[in-house]
Image (cartoon, rainbow, N blue to C red; front, side, top):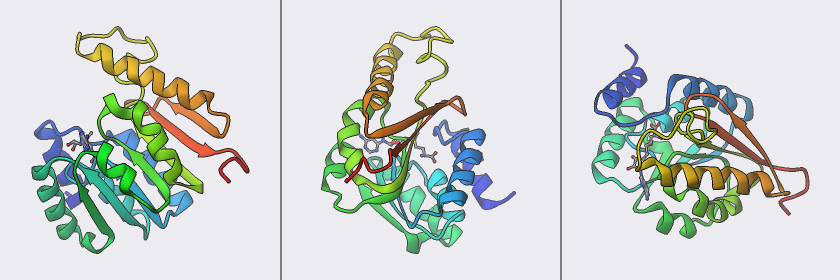
Length: 198
Ligand SMILES: C[S@@+](CC[C@H](N)C(=O)[O-])C[C@H]1O[C@@H](n2cnc3c(N)ncnc32)[C@H](O)[C@@H]1O
């Protein structure tokens, strides 16, 4: 088994919610197509999706992550994959670390706290390059956001509400081109409309 696949299997066995296979395939294709030079990931966990993105490009990645154990494990994984030189990990709550970033990125992958997605819109949009692509994971949240599936647990009501507002707000933003894809747990792909990010 390839090391990247082993990292995926090991993470999933411990209920670390790494990206699903269809999501990986979509992101691999997108990364291959746009060949970003700079990537921002919010929610790195043990570095699986970051490694997928790095393996398909020559990009440098900045990863925001709050969990110390996850960061230690991610560092070991990047080292084992020979990717450490291309990774900058910023430890802490992304709501505090995001506003401190002062560069723009060609590709942004949001896979952090779902309850904060809405609040993160004004923090993320200024970080996206003119031709950049921003992908957010889990936006359909097991079919509960679209209403295809009923909300199964009381604790999901808040998250589903936030994700619905998040998608509505993005779709209402006239500067952005927003597409929702029923891939994996739901992906939202955002780009600037032509001439709308000056
Ligand atoms: C779904 S996992 C990320 C999985 C990863 N993208 C992958 O597919 O390999 C979400 C991660 O976000 C982190 N996280 C949750 N809340 C956070 C916060 N407020 N700031 C930074 N990271 C956070 C969690 O510790 C967890 O590692």
